[in-house]
Image (cartoon, rainbow, N blue to C red; front, side, top):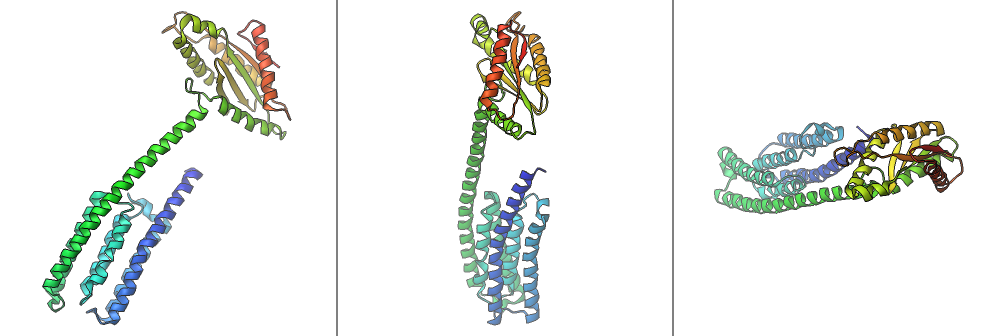
Length: 364
């Protein structure tokens, strides 16, 4: 895994932990409120049982934090553990409701905090399912309590409470679904924007016709190469290339064939360079190779390979017996000079190749 991917993953884990801590803040408040309700004699269990219950709740909360801190959460389909945390919160709330003699609504509505937390990750169906399960769980909890301690259950009040809880949960479900839909729209827009920006960045540095680096990209590469040269620890060379009689090709065969010539030459030249070299189109029929770490002799050998492969390019499928050639000017970097100085020297070598009959390599 690359360093950038590790950084992104660390940021996602930090976000998951922050959201989990926010959600568990409701759990802490739930424990504190339960503590006060117990001391108001509103629980029907003993003190020992009550503190064991709080310890169990606390251990569950801490285990969720530990799972994210250790990275164990990454083993699951949803590393945020959203549904697990939702069901854990529901379990804690319903167990507390079961052991209360009265004032159950004070605890019950803590589940709405969990629903807000779920809106960050859950879809419409999941949100609705959680709401249905919450209402069903409340009804089952009250039914179980009535079976054990009917003296603590007022059927009329509990029926009204269940209806109110169901209505509120239904409202939260609708709201959560809208939040989920909005989040999906924002995510799609974000992805579309990311793709558009990526495409813009690509267009900014890539020649659209040939797929090679454009002038802007090549100048950036030359700047980096020359900065190393000026430190006295590096060399590089350039091959300035110009397709011979390209205007005549356009005039005779048309611009469509002319574009084909440029694309096939670009493909051929790109196939001859070494790893670390760069080839780009700097305008019209002019191309350049930046031969990284190469002296004049190595760059000249590279230029000759490109010149020979250019002669063998076949255009039989669209231009009959068309054959093309290329003239190349080669020069090597010098300490302390500017990029313009080097390109001027390469251009002079290219001019010499043209003057000396074309389809040749000249070196300065």
